[in-house]
Amino acid sequence: MVTQEVFKIKDPQNLDEVALALLSVYPQGRIFAFFGPMGVGKTTFIKAICRQLGSTDNVSSPTFSIINQYLTPSGDNIFHFDFYRIKELVEVYNLGYEDYFFSGGYCFIEWPEKIEGLLPDDSHKVYMKEVDGERIIRF
Image 1 (cartoon, rainbow, N blue to C red):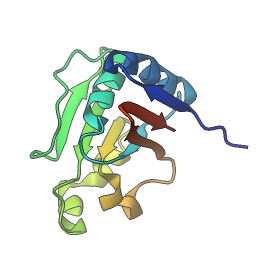
Image 2: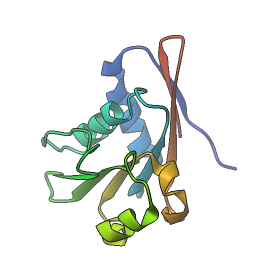
Image 3: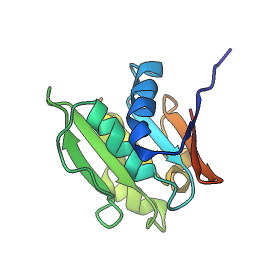
């Protein structure tokens, strides 16, 4: 039986707790797909996860670059994708997405619904929404 974690967040400063929970639930997880509407805080949550991984890099939305790379203190790669502007899958193939997804590095993917058929089977889905001023995060 698969358990599901659900968190209700009013204060963004509590995202660090949720980030730690996510990493604890999936200690071997490397690929995470973040589903949710624009403005729900996907990038903010990914920043919190990167902090929990020890990264001191400036985590920002890769809306225009499509991918940003960060490092953990131990030198592990973190790849942060934003596929919002992708119009055709050929663009994802041209990025060489397989090199990232199968590198063993962390992959945090915003707008994964644009490439859902390309997500590896071992991807972990994170769902985010806002209800009455609370962010609800489910994984």
